[in-house]
Image (cartoon, rainbow, N blue to C red; front, side, top):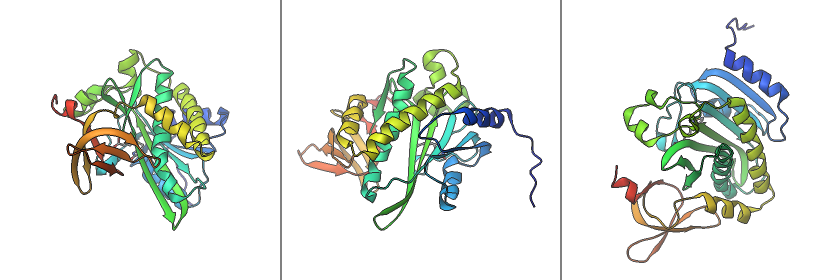
Length: 274
Ligand code: BTN
């Protein structure tokens, strides 16, 4: 038998206490760690072992936080690092809408602090052009059946930006920097779980138009000249719309409309001021 003699950290104790009193339709179980490699990796292991929808893994810090496109997600103290395990009963192609659900939940939560958050396609959450939160979705399906979806979310909450590498410092912000005072993480989590419940319910009820309409009010991508790095090369043009799968429609110089399923989106004006 393995007996863990390690003392629980204050973060673990407080978060477990918070979860005991949390009343949420969305959260079924909060699995708390002081430090993990990556909450997404642990969430994936739990999902493979059968964890139910609504299981959430949270850590105070991560040693190997993962971002999109195999990037590192810096995860110092002060950030929120969590991964949601979902098992939506939908055709597998509908999972491409979940990044929009997550981005809406995060941006609405931030807005409740009086901060105007914008979304860069598909799911970067930014404030005045600086990234405040990132979302990494990983999923597994067998044929048409979704087995699990992991939505990993990192939010720069009470983060001292000077601990980030210099290049990131200029491109990032935190809620602490935006509101000028630190924010109670449990208040934030409560609001975030409520917003997640609202937007995920819209998704489960197939109210896709409503999700897209709300996403469109928050994005600053549409109408902009952008460059997208995709797995098959870089494309440039004006972002004109997203389709019903959340794919980006890009109008190139020749007037051709290209459909981009996934990629790293950069704004032309920001590229040239970098
Ligand atoms: C991105 O913008 O590149 C996505 C960043 C996602 C980071 C979060 S932090 C919690 C979860 N665990 C990870 O390893 N990554 C995600």
